[in-house]
Amino acid sequence: MVTEERLASWTGPSSDAEQLKQDLTERMIREAIAAHAAFDGVNLSIYAKGSYANNTNVKFDSDVDIVVECREVEYWEDYDPSAGGHPAGSPYEGPWTPDRFRAEVKAALVNKFPNGSVTSGTTAFEVEATSSRVNADVVPCFTYRMYFANGSYQEGTKLFKTTGGSIVNYPKLQLERGRAKNTRTNGAYKKTVRILKRLENVLVDAGLSDEVPSYLMECLIYNCPDEYFTRATWRGTMQGCLADIYNYTNRSEPADEAERWLEANGAKFLFHGSQKWTREQVHAFANAAWDYMEFG
Image 1 (cartoon, rainbow, N blue to C red):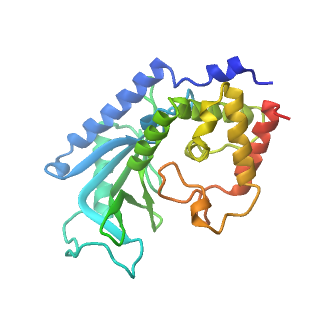
Image 2: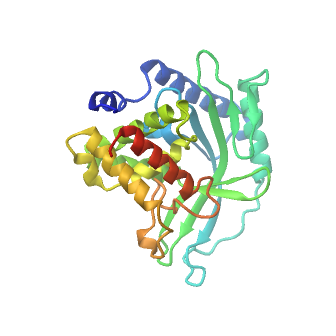
């Protein structure tokens, strides 16, 4: 049985040494973009996203994700095209196409991290770790807004894949809503996310589960009721969360949108046809975690 003491030891973030490496990695990427002449005078927003930014990373899962957002261009959609919501404006005719922006971000990184340290994926550039820094994914993207009929909007990013197509994310909303849930639960939300991530590491190492994406685990805990995080023990918290995850993924997606689980940004449905994960994958993981915890 996984004891209360062991669970408590799993609540902490990555080590101070790892934190120093993460901070150095972020700083070096910021320096690379700032030093690149092609970006002089360009409206860019550079910020961390994901587990590092949200303080839910754990040892051995301590990569850094850095967004390089071009705010010279706004991509947008209307939530209800028939109702409108986006204010009238002229199409963008400037130089910052997705291909050019991606090429300049790559050039900036290669100048800072030479000798093959930078490799290109379909969405992000990976900067290889050294003894003093961690692996980093650098994501070139553009400002994106989803407009509602009343003219309000939720802001995210739009990134373009080298293989075609695009992806909309909401990293700032993830940060804001994660902080709000953590405040409501007196800090227990993020501690529970770290417990689940460390539990997943144990299960994978033991051959009891396939790997589960770090972001997905944060999303699963995000959907668990706040009341679970006020229970007297970590075992009690985990029992409630794993039961909810198991039960939710043991049935089909609810027809009522209000009952569907969301990503940790609160803006996108957690399960749908184009996600990188499936309900069956999550259900199998929850089952393995429940058994390993010996909840009976």
